[in-house]
Structures are given as C-alpha cells and as structure tokens.
Length: 251
Image (cartoon, rainbow, N blue to C red; front, side, top):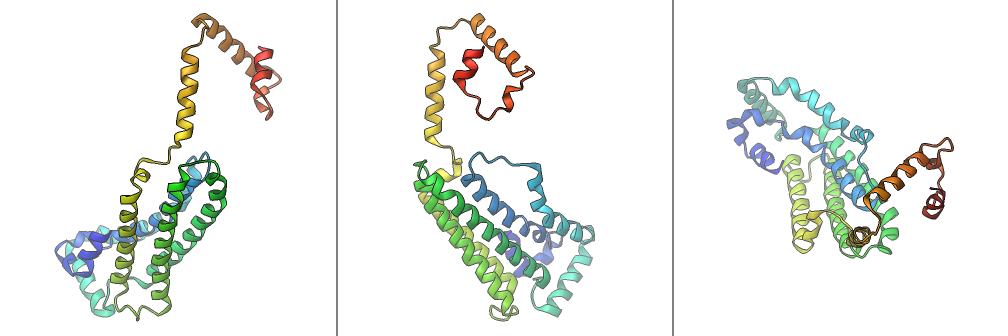
C-alpha cells in the first residue's frame, strides 16, 4: 500500500495506470485485520469462525464499486487521473477517506476493549504475557496516533495538511515503522503466541503415556468401552461436570 501510495502521489501512476485505485479496497482490510491480531492473541482458545468474514464486507463493497473502473483501458484511467488531480489537487477521495478513518476508530475501540478485558486474566497466568503486553501497548498506541491524525485531518476539512492522501500514507508509514522497531526488540511475536508452559505440559503428558505398561490390545479394549460409553442413551458428553475418575470407574 505504501509503494502504491508513493507511485500515486508522485504522479508516476500515469506510467502504470492499471495500478490506479487498486489500494483503495485494501485499506478496508487493515482495521479488521488489526482487530483479529489483538483478539487472537488475548482471547483464550480463539478460533476463526466463518461469521467473522462479515468484518470484510466493506472491502468487498469497495472492490465491487471499483471493478468497472479496473476493467477500463489505460487511456481512460490516465484521463481520469489527470482530470481528478486538476479538479481536486489530490488523488484522495473524501468520502472513502472519512469512512476508512471512522472504520479505523471503531476497530481501535474494539481492540482496546479486548486488550483490557483479557489482559488481566492472562497476565497472572502466563509468563509470556510479560513480553506480549508491552508490545501491544506500543502497537495500540501507534495505531491510536495514526487514527487520531486521520480524524483530525477530516475534522479540518483536509486543509491543515494540504494533501490528505500524502498525509494518510505518512500516518500508515509511521505506524508500520513503529511496529518494525518493536519487532526488533520482541521478534518472538513473529512466531505466534504459543504458550511455553502449555507446550511443556504436553511434552510431560506425552512422555508419561510413552512409558505406559498397557499393551496395544488393552488400549483398544479401553478405547472401545469409552466409545460405547459416549454413544450410550444417557449422552454423558452433555454433562459439563463429567470427570476423569467417574468415567474411568464406569468403563
């Protein structure tokens, strides 16, 4: 997006007209993706569900809106660019600029909500949160500064910073540079939020069963009894208090 931004506001887009407006729908992806980054890290047992795809409806709508333009020839796009710049002085589209700023604000609020809701619970249990929490403080702060700048530009009717398109690209670049610097100090964020404590417990449990004295036939018998128990008319799997010792004694 930053590369396309530089090509657009430098005027070099006339040499690559088919790239014009390709970045517009992509902008609508960033707010929900930023939210899911925070949500997936801090919400216990997070799983992406199909219903979450509704968050990307603005991207699809904008893509559909610009599809007829994308299918035009190079000459049409060059004429469009020249006339748009001549009349407005910037490649920015005020309506979309405003909508993207508001969308960013909405998802920023949701990120802070998730962050403050789950952070206290996880910080007390997981040592890995000692690194993750400060990293996300920087992530959210940089994002807040970016959104605040975009909203301020909208409130001043795009007059304060002269070219809203250049300013928005500068804000996004500022945000990305902050994240890159943060990753230099916390590179483990690139490898996911796998809890070391959980991994160690899994290894211990695996080693314990490797030393089991049960034969293969005995394991098969136990597994068969367990499956029959789950398929019984009492439907034990619906019991939220089903315990290991109770099931073991029954089978």
